[in-house]
Image 1 (cartoon, rainbow, N blue to C red):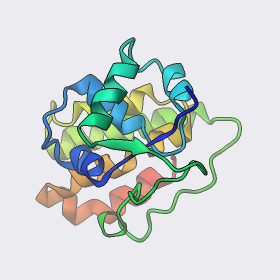
Image 2: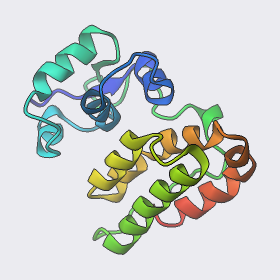
Image 3: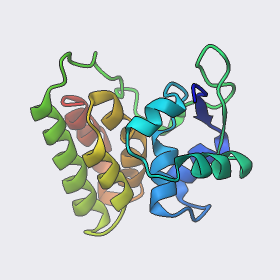
Image 4: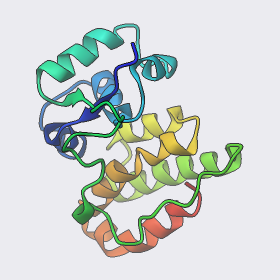
Length: 170
């Protein structure tokens, strides 16, 4: 169970476009795959009792692949450079975890998606943000959140400001 998976380009595309039609639970597993977490660590995140079959399906359909032995991804990049603003550099994660900042980040993600995308849009991003227990986990939602905000005209206009605000707490 020490295998480490990373997203393929198809997996990154699925996160941003939902083109593959994955159900919410399967997408959540895909979101947490980052090229660093082992299957054992994914199991600890309580991603469902069928985790192994979900991983098998994601791998068979080309959404994920085994990461190389160094724990880094083969050819897939976690965040395409053109997808995020230049200011999207994460600060060092606080140690211990700052629960207040995590709660602020969760609420910010939820409120901005509700405001710019609608009350029921992108619930999988909100659910994953609220499931996050560390800054590293909530940072996995930055890319999908940013992409969702940028898909709306008002969000695109305020994207840099919104990113700056979120980056202060994640």
